[in-house]
Length: 382
Image 1 (spheres, rainbow, N blue to C red):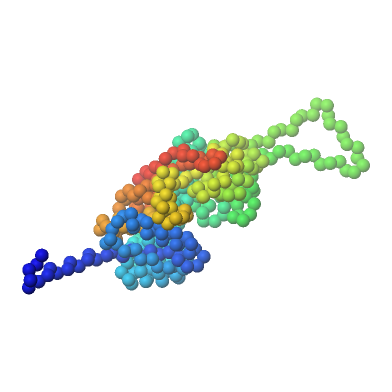
Image 2: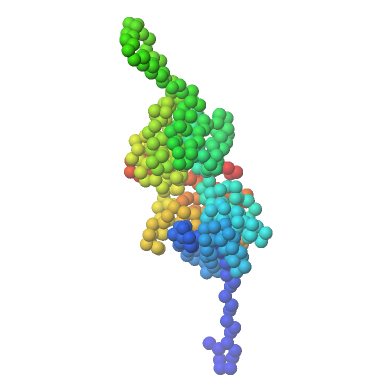
């Protein structure tokens, strides 16, 4: 204790805080998702227990213009790293502001075209999904593949990834057929059946003209030839919900030999009713590590009193990675390749803007899916 007349020691200044800008749709139609992602980001910061970091949310309003404005506000207030925004369009708008300032962006989109420069893509991309589930099928001997997918960028990227995965094994590309997102998908099944060598059943003979006695069949009439069915080892159905169930149930009618291994995408993880369709029981799809996901869901539920929506985990991951980068002095270059255990399993950021994720493979069963292969990180460079 200082003596009377002795100067008190100077109060030590608090260390400067590193600001992380969080870009989320906090108003508009996506506001409920934005609020849940904000909660997940706050959970990640709390669990890291670092009071030298500040998480500052900015409302993107769910538009590209709003996201660009939010990014400018965050940078003007001293943000050293940006987490978000939600969509590919918003990410492109934010990148135009962040790249000249050399501020990293950990975006939630799954559009790999946005990766690079100072932007990292945290969403699970179509290529990651295909590589994981097709790899599981290849490891069990599948060699002939087909893909039924909606028209558009998502379907095209699935096809490109499937071609790449099969070419890497010296195999021919898949039979591919697209369907209108809001149209009849059964025509796509018939298309891959024809591509696989299926022949339609013989047409029924035309009825005789009115008043003509029906000809008696010859005594030794030859039986009609059986139609040839397409034979595939695995078919990836890039759809969920009722449409996925109709496609799975319609394989034989379309001219495809059954049983056949059906594959799906990560969309299936949010469809609890898939196991009610017998044709889908035994199908495989890529998804989160069940243990990691269950643990995250439990912590989120305990903290906020509600279930975490699927996108909340990506906000948790991005914030955790941002905190680690800021703490480790690599705030300008978070893509160090160091492994991080996220809400849905392991992941790492690579220097080229990609996020490698360790995905599990799950099998559809009545009730809940069961784990077929645990989460595994892909080989380096993939």
